[in-house]
Amino acid sequence: MTTDYGAEQIQVLEGLEPVRKRPGMYIGSTGPRGLHHLVYEVVDNSVDEALAGYCTHIVVDLNADGSVTVRDDGRGIPTDIHPRTGKSALETVMTVLHAGGKFGGGGYKVSGGLHGVGISVVNALSEWVEVTVWRDRKVHKQRYERGVPVTELMTEPAQDNRTGTQVSFMPDAQIFTTGIEFDYATLAGRLRELAYLNAGVEIRFTDHRQAQPRQDIFHYAGGIREYIAYMNVDKQVLHEEVIYVQGERNGVQVEVALQWCADAYNDNLLGFANNIRTIDGGTHLEGLKAVLTRTINTIARKRNKLKENSPNLGGENVREGLTGVISVKVPNPEFEGQTKTKLGNTEVRGIVDSLVGEALTEYLEFRPAIADAVIDKAIQAFNAAEAARRARELVRRKSVLESSTLPGKLADCSSRDPSESEIYIVEGDSAGGSAKQGRDRRFQAILPLRGKILNIEKTDDAKIYKNAEIQALITALGLGIKGEEFDVSQLRYHRIIIMTDADVDGAHIRTLLLTFFYRYQRSLVDQGYIYIACPPLYKVERGRNHYYCYSDRELQERLSSFPENANYTIQRFKGLGEMMPEQLWDTTMNPETRTLKRVEIEDAAEADRIFTVLMGDRVAPRREFIETYGPKLNLTDLDI
Image (cartoon, rainbow, N blue to C red; front, side, top):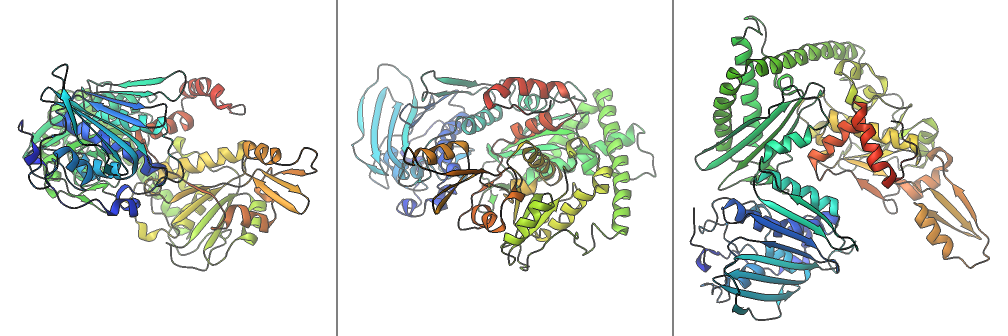
């Protein structure tokens, strides 16, 4: 472990000037995602101190004025003069892009912050930043405004021997033009995730923006084992004990936690590399999937669950009902792609395979009851998959699923370029008629669905492939078979837009469609292809002018802007079919004027849990959820 952490460990790669000109290049966007990324960057530095073994407490405060403060009890950023820049190491870290202790200078063995852009970018995109460092029995302070230091580094003696760093910052409203208000739930989800991934670290998160502060303390001695228990709290588990593997080989640390559920038909595998969620997978997940399949098949044959001449269980059979987390810490991570969400280090696959293989084999051989339960579940999945395959073959023979025949009710667009094409999934023929007439035929396709589609959370694969509406969806979009690797080249539209009525039935249909996409082909959601249209609720006419209002609040604001005795009429749109084609185009389908919500999953574990609660077989967790949150959300029309 490296204890010598001084200015010489801070290496300078390049300057900071371009950040304010092109912020999207560094934080992804200047919308809510980029805004919250600022907090993650600062917290990542504290977590890196925890990874190095020097930090146990992290405090995150949303302050009353809208700023954020992150404090830790790590070593504190070095403050001595950097030999290359001639400035303090603190000012170098804060004002020079890619300056830090994570580039092989010996400051950190592994780090998560390296995937991001560092605290210098937070500094560049903030109206002001104030940094306080406690180290060497001194307190060091400096203030920056829009990336430029406005005070010298001020140093005074400390009252005690504490160490650590505190960073307070106010995001710059000139950069984040859509707003600088942080969402508590979004930040809490990521901080909870970090606490699970770093067992023993306590993260105290407080929101001081209300009169009554709200606080959560995330502290999990059991680490990712507790993460699994949290994800499976509303599921019927196959074995009570969470299978846990931990080891280190060639400097790569591996942690795996696994638990199978009796009442789930999908797997939920989350991969992390240096605390970064690897949405697009990578070598660590490939290694885990391979070793799970091989180990379960080997033990199944040893226990005579599989006969000599019978085929091996497939990976998707073995993983059915599995909730798993794999977290690897890699000294020199290689992340693929612009979004850095796929681990590329080839050596990690073999390390995961060998470590997990040895430990899992030993675990299951000493616990035959658990081994039998997992194998029986996999064999059951294999048999169900065979039944589904036969159902698919039947469908194929009818030339629906894999032939070039598109569903008759699909009004396709003329473009054959998926990147510019979009499809609106609408409920009913009347809405479909308006949408077909109002659309731009060049790049917009319309697929009307009749009634409510199957809830696939409760349905086996054989029924899915026999359902006409599901078949139409699969064929129109160009999706493959459930469970197969997602092939983006087969996807016929890169914007899949759910457009339903603004009533209870419309909300239900939207939820069923989201369940279908999340469970059938989750990569569509993870990679940002799913959108929700936002049709107006009201049309207000006054004289020759008319206004569309998208919420009750917007309606009240519009009405209050009229003179006191003004004459006006209000039309409430009960369904999309009531709108004229031109109205639907102007308000909901015209790329120049419409609002689309992209479906994103910030907290995968929470999303999985909510789908299980709301759409699964068990009534008790759903009733509890509605009784808890119903009064807050005014859910008056829900069917428990």
